Length: 343
Ligand code: PS7
Ligand code: MN
Ligand code: MN
Ligand code: MN
Ligand code: MN
Ligand code: MN
Image (cartoon, rainbow, N blue to C red):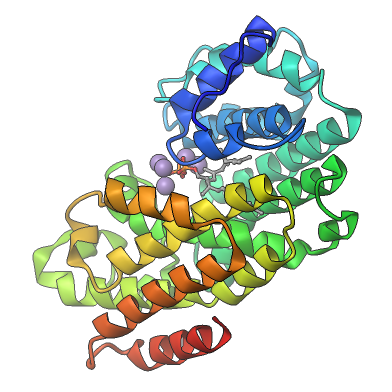
């Protein structure tokens, strides 16, 4: 299902699929396997948000300029000439070649355009809130993750409803759609502790790390490893609470291509949480699940029954890693017990 035949598409749309393959390890294949006109719509949605996130992530853009760009970003979708050539980021091509993306965006059905543009507007505005403020409380962690990922889940759900491939009532499940995004984003933030710290970015909530350290950076020190792992396990435990929502959301999906698109990233995330749980390597290296394990998950994430099996498997794996001296251990056990009961 990797790269389907694109020769009948416009050169710009072909370029968009190339950009998708260049900028996403996790989403390229599942997006290209989507049925009907969801395939171009979700590809463009991805590239638009990748462009927005590239602006957010670029620490060489002065904050004042960045705020203007993030807030006005959704208007650039209707500006055929707008691009940005000053970025130093890995994925800067999506900003340089933005006229190809916006041109293909304007060819999408008007309902798709409306959804994508509205989500880009809300996400851009939300990102500016956290440009100058760090994430303090657990509530603010949910708020940041809502802006950068929960909104993606909500927008995707609106696209699924508009496509006719899912029941239109799916759109009403905004809380569950938000949880789908939060589960991915929280896992990404937990795993990327070191990647973000070395780039001078902090996404671990202070309410969590301040129980174990005076500075988030201290977790890099080998002498602070025990506290670092306690904080890690605390955040993983909090993220695991989203799993019942994930299962419920997935139970409403009927179309197989949408099911796979939604499920594969979620199963990669739970495998990533199991790998990170109680694992000091999070503070030493950038860790990733093994390729063979990823391939297995991709093949198995095709029905609600297999998802339950995968979730049960990783829940038991985490359960067996609980350290009896871990202050969150009791809560971790209770959440996993609940998950194993609903699986
Ligand atoms: C439109 C498929 C399926 C109901 C670019 C998919 C960055 C975790 O931080 O590069 O650079 O390390 O690994 C994806 C819900 C969003 C949330 C979010 C758009 C699932 C811009 C993905 C992806 C909702 C903000 C991973 C959230 O990127 O992160 C489409 C249902 C983009 C989804 C960011 C992160 C995605 C992310 P980083 P990555
Ligand atoms: Mn970002
Ligand atoms: Mn990013
Ligand atoms: Mn990250
Ligand atoms: Mn990433
Ligand atoms: Mn990253």
